[in-house]
Figure 1 (spheres, helix red, strand yellow):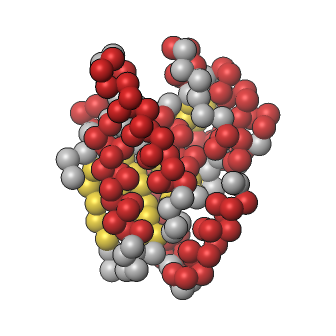
Figure 2 (cartoon, helix red, strand yellow):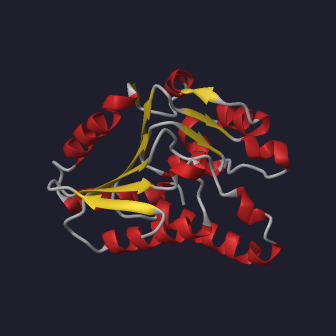
Length: 212
């Protein structure tokens, strides 16, 4: 992979690290395709019981790579890769934890919302600034987590919230110092992996069906 780093530890937890630190891990077409390809591979790998997604450097991600939106000839590819990547995240048959180590904005706020659990660093922040540029945010994944009122307000205003407010409204499950984030998320993954993989798959099918 060119835009992500993938690892699998001895406990069976796979980690996807968004790895475009020079662009604050902006999600390009290639990155979306690589995330989809990785998830497809791990979908069939019984050694992988859960997945962590995090970002390289000091950002989770600045959202979609806006330079690609200026390339009119790539608009179909943009839409197609985005739709497929969102479906692949939502329908993945094993738990996904977002380890949000810094700002998660725009399309990457959506990425965090497509995960089953979100754990944030104190340096994390969230927002949908794309509304200011004429791009409507994805409302439904956020509404499922924080409820209708909070979701509408965040989508319509585009304002950024910090990790403390994210915890207060239920967007994230816990907040930790940045240097301890991955360690704490790893502990959570170990707890999840105490369950048989068939039970985890069944639970995920139940989650997906409930929101169909």
